[in-house]
Image (cartoon, one colour):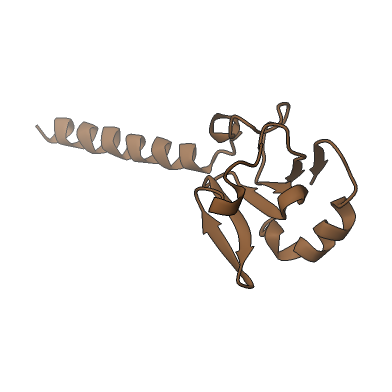
Length: 120
């Protein structure tokens, strides 16, 4: 009986360790990419959409745009941009934490560029 109990504890502990290690493994986020995102990128944190001065945060599936001087996080674009064509829009891939905080630099750098560009 004692051996069975010890085996059960070892089995449960092994399951917990494998779950924890699975959470630590880096993985791609291609399964959560929006359908309108450019292909060919294994990992993307943000898309910057310079035409509408908006970011899209891939992990949380949120658009980030300014409203009344504050950054707004939303699962959809504001009503004024509902008809914006995301599929044909210029998209710039950004893999830097809090990319929207560097909006002034991004606006200056990408205001005249066309096509998808990766920034790491």
